[in-house]
Length: 270
Image (spheres, rainbow, N blue to C red):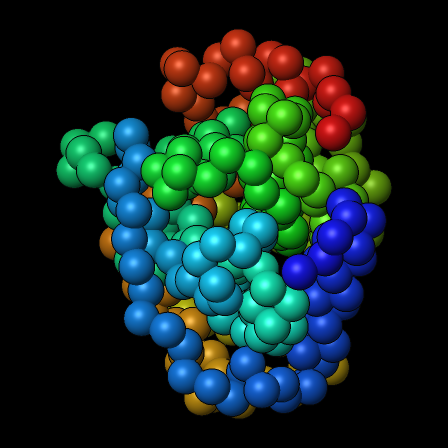
């Protein structure tokens, strides 16, 4: 077990680097081993499915995936962290895998404040007072938001992709054409045809994104099929659509997060 915060963060950062190389084709011992059966914990809004590795009394590290991926993104990370004596928790975000909303009638929303609160609620439900976090894409945004709202809960954070808190209150200036083109899916999901296409064949869109975002990653059908059930969650489409529409101010957020989103619009430091 590391004896200092610096050693703790070095261990976490090294494992995040291992994840990046694993995605490029490295097959680690953790990747070849069978994944543990998902567990579930109840929070005020959702039952969060998650996988757990390492000793239960180790310092807690929470790893958060993004869109359109799932907990399998961290298969190359959990082994080294668990071997170092950490308790490693890998939750499925709302809309993915076994994670489910408690209220069948609740709107399926996924604004940044909501997924940041999910992280705090997840730790609370497991009785974890302080923890380290690493995430990418949606997971990184959730971690950044949670770190702004509850900094005293964080041992440390490995940020994959930089500061990703968004201004959902004031319209942003137009993107340059080349940058906007990379986000075609975001604009697509802001249209009704895009939402229908995601509902009609989510796997077609997800695999296209996998192929184009990581063209040198030669994953197999078997690798994709390990993650595919996560995208069959009945809430996947409405959650994804709401997330991308809310950030463009084309869908309302939850009333309970209005003040939080106003605070986040100022892009406070982590």
